[in-house]
Image (cartoon, rainbow, N blue to C red; front, top):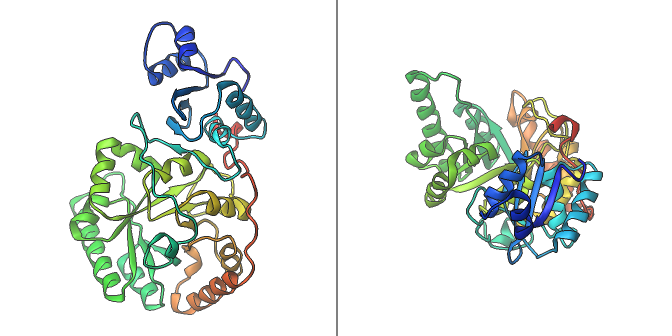
Length: 353
């Protein structure tokens, strides 16, 4: 990205460039329409900048940084291979793990409770530990019988769902809620948050595209339900955005290459996972390509609160779960590895254009 495609300036400078008086979001949009691929209007308020890129737009909130210093840091991050949205997050940081907040839209993000450590230290009743993700209620019953106490029911909506599918979904969610409650397990329903709330589910998991699609009003309604929220994240801008929702946990992935989903993201590796755990200020779960107990032992040393297992559960979870549990405890008993000062890019710039 050359200097003509990157604009970092104050609001007054943006008005001069774009012509006419307007608020920061509109000014940035005008500059994007004139050919800028990334715009950051710095110092709109104390410590608050407006970001507009191909991947993310919103208020970037943290320690104030002058426009010139911000631009220099952002160019350096771009040179290291970060896409513009992540480069802006890096530029906003004043210390290696001092992650800023990013809004979901035009409203400023709420400042979440700040804490360090895992779930127990944050006032949550328990660590997430092994976290099984399954696609049917009978399968969920299997993993509960195997001793897993954090579970997610992930039933994807077909392109043209019929009444029978909706009836089956309701039946599956209701059964999952009953079975999890009977075992004292923590349950998250993927995607179907309104049905989950109606039926009394304690928690939901949503991807970032789904959360964006809800809009400000939808996210407010979701928060008002009081359900625990798990949020996916694959990049720095998604992590900075997820933090503002004060979630029960933030998922970091894919740690290793995965066939479960077709995604553009580069593997996070153990280094980015450890960085997530240090910077997120929320419990972090590791997900993606975790198939064997040895991998669980490795990720457990990162400081993550939970480890997601999907395909690795195999046909009979009662046969596989004990080895995963032992590996989790063995990893936590080992010396934690040190998080790097800075993360590496998780999206190839060439593939993101």
